[in-house]
Length: 350
Ligand SMILES: *[C@@H]1O[C@H](CO)[C@@H](O)[C@H](O)[C@H]1NC(C)=O
Image (cartoon, rainbow, N blue to C red; front, side, top):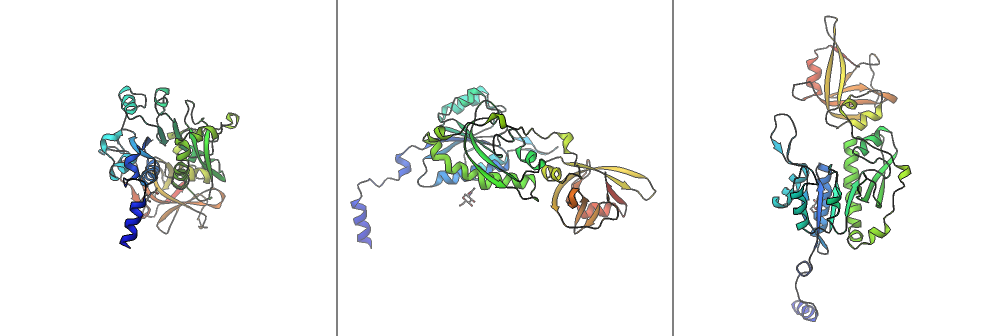
């Protein structure tokens, strides 16, 4: 056995230096911020650690640390937190307010990135930025472009009740989500799925796979040639969801799914007090699940309490089960604690 190994070794015409130290790996820069971008980074770091990888993640760009809740300490973006957990050097994590800042751009230039990759980064990339990476910038966008260009593609698609959506890997150009498409993957939309879960599915299952699969062609330039220009006449927009829209309309089951999990989803309910008066409560909906089980409601608008959940009747015979709620200025509580606090007063949806 030992002799065979020796023979194999001496027969090899190559010096026994690992490949990675003889070939300089191509530097990539990854930009993102929320948890979904951390998932993509994870896949990218795994791929770069494989013995045959020709690239490395040279730097990460993310949003500056922010206060995620009132009175809370400054916290890093989920992407930065994940990068640090995986042993990424904090010197190589950049947090510019805007991607056009001069100091940031000169730091980026100094790395000579071959490619920049964005996944839910959230800042506009100016031409001064896009000119830096030699192979360009690519973006993972959670829709089938040219459909749902913009900040809220997943929520808008759910709101429209689409049966399928997907993820696109496209070159970044100055116009929003309008660059040539390298590859797409289609996903069937389950009618129970909610926005945060669909978002994760699109980035985790489809987006990471598309990116790592296409990286070789992007780095050798063939993706540039095969990328298909978008049909701009078919483009639709998916603008950011604003606070006014965060009021839940229980009659639109699709909007319940689209907005659940979106921070700040609120609902107005009517509580019938024992003294015959009624008061309106504004509750913030923290955790939900959508079900199509049948619940007997005393009256059409009544909210019931079943299996640890506040059950709101919605459109098309479906119900929204709310597991955690928060009253203004109070701590979030589970549905049982909230229901007990009503002490038998009836609650109706408004
Ligand atoms: C990266 O590798 C780790 C360890 O093998 C694994 O647990 C993780 O799921 C991988 N991540 C992705 C996105 O594939």
